[in-house]
Length: 278
Image 1 (cartoon, rainbow, N blue to C red):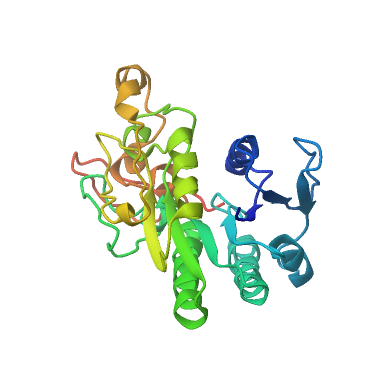
Image 2 (tube, rainbow, N blue to C red; image 1 turned 90 degrees about the vertical axis):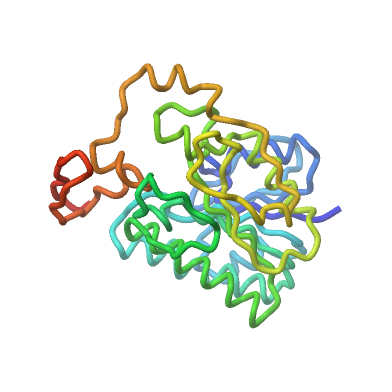
């Protein structure tokens, strides 16, 4: 049975993945950042540390076949933090994968790598990248890094552009971007078991009726999502939309308005004012 490592195991998404994989009896090494993890079961292989430290990375990846890399800053933050956690740490992770002979990395990219597309424009996996901030930009860079390590070192990567990974959709945007937890775990099963994927990108999204993203190509993994946000549409649409005009106009939602300085008109003549940078 393959040995799996999970970085970012203490985060919101990582906690879901860790719990589910352990419940399935998958040999898992779980890593958090500065705070130690409490074992979920007796004898669980857990660790913590800074992934910018090669020794920590080597401990994480020793004997590992597949790394599910969820660690890093997952929201828009000042550039120095993004560089430390999403660029420098990612290089150390891939260098560690190279040293330790890890076969495959599942890299948590993001829909924010394409967030500046309008919601009226359906996208395929080969669309040009249009990040909506420093966080999204770090995912563009991460996808390119993963590509380079496949081309130069033969380390396979599956870059998953995660949408809104929640137990259920709670706002109108999620009707297009929702990635249900059941589909997430099925997706990761396929990432672990699929043969000879090389390098690929996939939308991390469920089978939503209103999806903006064509996931043609995910067949290589055998990924067949079954969840659909439309089941929740009536309830979601009966409530308020938390996004402002700008957030409703672009696929990146609320991230688009952070440090947005253009003053331009939407289809309804509304303007998008600047928002102070974080």
